[in-house]
Image (cartoon, rainbow, N blue to C red; front, side, top):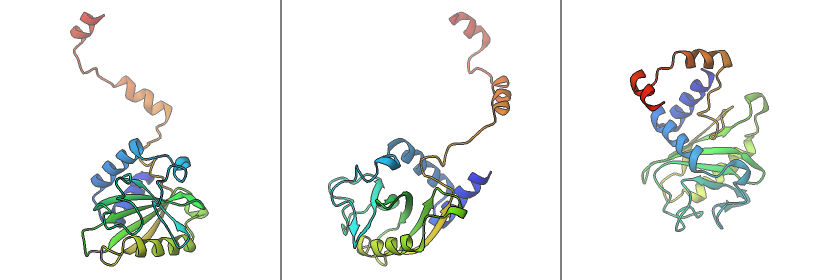
Length: 184
């Protein structure tokens, strides 16, 4: 229930539907590089402006489509990692169509009490976005922080063992018992 609340908050702040966010996170979980490999796997020139390094994780850059300052950032949701000093903190960007400012949500997996997305991180992101997204109007207009949510575990739901066993007892096969006996 708490995780659902966090997902709804992220969707609201990113100005997308919860369905869009969930579908994006599902693709991220399957296709984007894991946090430990982020900086090592970053394509050359992926993003490094004024010492604030951000790496586009999803969608993966191709044909220069993620180079800093490039005018070919795709519209829709983008996921960046926060560079070598804070590669465990992520930025989810809803990149709007030409002329409209994008919105960004910093996703800090640590609890709010251990918030690692300090003001300097937010300042670095604003500086990066002004440079890298400047060809799309005003860059990133809104920036907010959500703590306690990691893009790779956002869709994982913990279930107590007793609840799992109870659900298994109520499970019904998708084929009839006659068909099951025929296959035995």
